[in-house]
Length: 108
Image 1 (cartoon, helix red, strand yellow):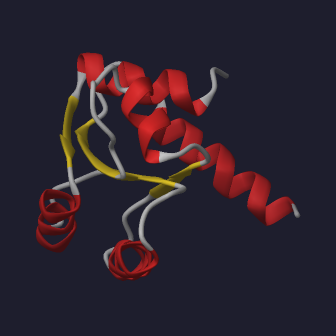
Image 2 (image 1 turned 90 degrees about the horizontal axis):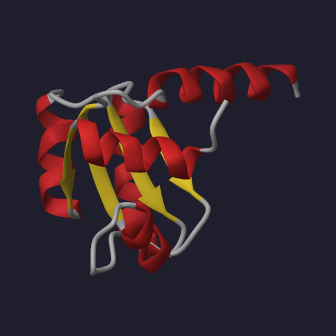
């Protein structure tokens, strides 16, 4: 399976994504989304709130291991991206990536 960076880029190119904490939080609260992607360098208070909301609404959360600048580069954008919400994954395999993560976590 391709790495998460490739699948994030594929979702940006072929699906429907939103960038930013306000829009992402709104989408989580309304239950419209499928996946949330969070950069490693996100402020602690935002990270804790998003982790809480995704867990509460049973929405998958991908913790991107790079910085917000690196996530912006992966998405092909000329700005930093700390948080993004995937409404439609398009041709990406992010949902199967999440299932693989869950399976690996259970085995440990």
